[in-house]
Image (cartoon, rainbow, N blue to C red; front, side):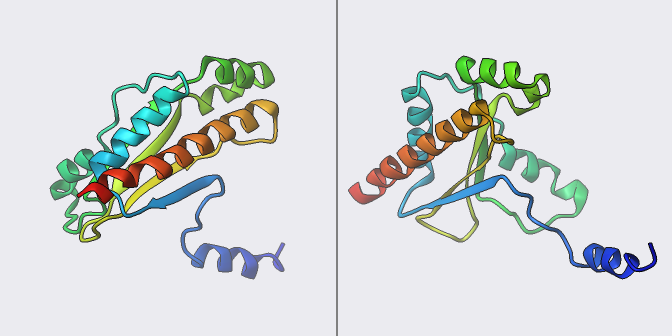
Length: 157
């Protein structure tokens, strides 16, 4: 056990580690409104209905003074949630604990001071089951469609 102590301390001092399963796509040139519309369109093109978005950027802005935060992380930021009944059933039948993977979500955001770039971020479904593969394929299709369509508005201007 004493031999493991230096290794454990090194891990603790190394700082935060990005968790596996997070995906990111930078889209540019793009405008937030166009990319957001492309995201909603891509979700709906899959036959899904996004729930009202989570206004993540607004929440951070509201809570910043109480937490003495002065530098914004996002210019605009929302999280859209959606569910495919077929994938939800598949995941649930594979393992009841997969309820925690539903609904699927994609975040869309811009950074302060950075123009013509919009970011998508999402968490992959965990595991290597048919349901997880179907969920991840759906998320990838949506991301690709957003990337293909989001910049069109920026090019018109």
